[in-house]
Amino acid sequence: MNRDLDDQEVLFMWRMFRAAILGVLIGIVGGVIFGQVSYVKKYKDKVSREIMADAVMYNNSLDDSGRVIRLKVDYDGNMKSEDERDELESYVGNTVMKQIGMWLGDDYNENLSYIQMRHNLVMAMEDINDIAQSAANAWGVDADANSGFSYEYFGDSGEDCPPGMYETLCIDLGDK
Image (cartoon, rainbow, N blue to C red; front, top):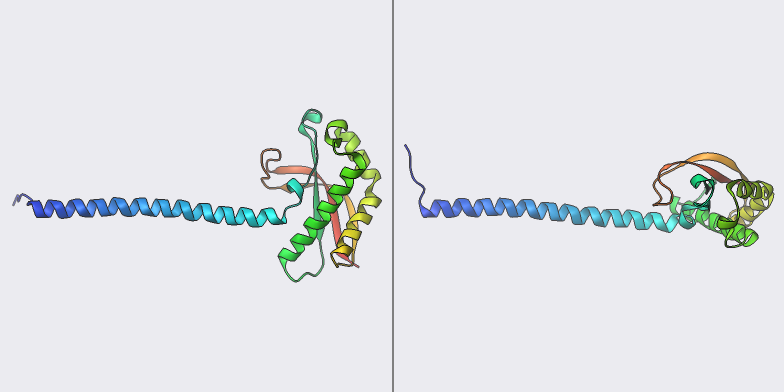
């Protein structure tokens, strides 16, 4: 029972094949577009909450074999939402970063070694706590600040800071 296909059947099969290929291509393009939109939305939401450049306080790539000091602010109090908590932490971190820049000068990354930078931060801990507390108060939060160094894990933050453990100036804020 070997039957030849007539022109009508061949045309129908060709149309079905084209429709299948077109469906696959549309699915792939749609997936790529959806993935990009989701990524951009997630990235954009994350960026608005980040502390300056994800809080790289010290990064003298010319010295100290790429050692980095980062900043992390944690508020352990009551907030209406997680976004509000992130905004407070970002505000406090940015305020501390700006003040440290004013103390040390804009070019402290080039002029100070890692040891000098860490020493300056240790010597200024009380002042850093006062600034963090004042910034939280300006935000409307009555909080105590306590800062210290530890090693913390950070996810991917771009070319300068791949994921990994970093020495971190941690500022812990807690309700009074």
